[in-house]
Length: 325
Image 1 (cartoon, rainbow, N blue to C red):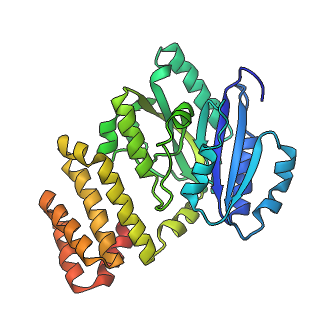
Image 2: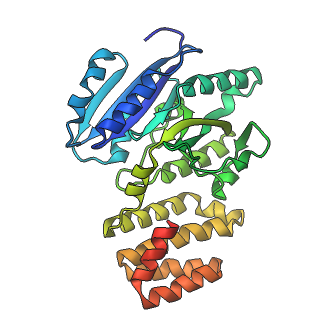
Image 3: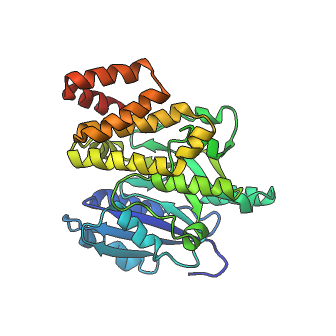
């Protein structure tokens, strides 16, 4: 690695995605260097059966100083990300979570580093932890609306924005590495698949330490939407259970703040997701408990109707789940 250049670390877990993974690798390799930087890309293969390592070997050979490959046996995406976080270069300046079905726009890192320079000139650099940017599908459609920016080129994200569910794209970002290097509690859960648990911890911590995040008016990534739909719409009892547990853990972190600041709508959203997943999983005691809590905090028509339908037919609730979740 060259001296005095920012080191950007890319964290890329993968599982049976060799063609998509190749696109992710190429998007890192072909980043513009208008502002010079160094890069390290760690690929953690979670027990792929499609010969991923052999497929990408040419890149591992050619860029052996920049691209590293690890293999683990069925540890899950959370463990894969944590494996890299725990072995990230101690000299890393910034990290970016780049899943194997993502591609960076070719000027993504340049644009983010340029924004960092602007922040430094405005004496705000040290307090900015994350730079968020927008994402589009392979068909050119935005994943989420940019209306949050209105007429501005950037906007600060507060902890209150997070509590009110205004932010919907937690890890499509550039983040300072130091917080992951120094704080080992900032790790992904390994038994459930939800990034929001880690986001909850980090947003709460940043708020307590007067640190800030910024959304930029910039599209920095291409996301393979059909693969996301395939994964997120998977229906199985185990997935319902993991979704419910994930919501419980998020509430453990932010429930007191949701109630303290009277964000009843957000609190109800988490309760609703918990009870509908426990219902579909089949844990009667837990779903009734969360249903009672959700009705206590918000007796809206949708909640009551879904409750009544759940008494009649599970398949109706399953259909609603597919539309809503």
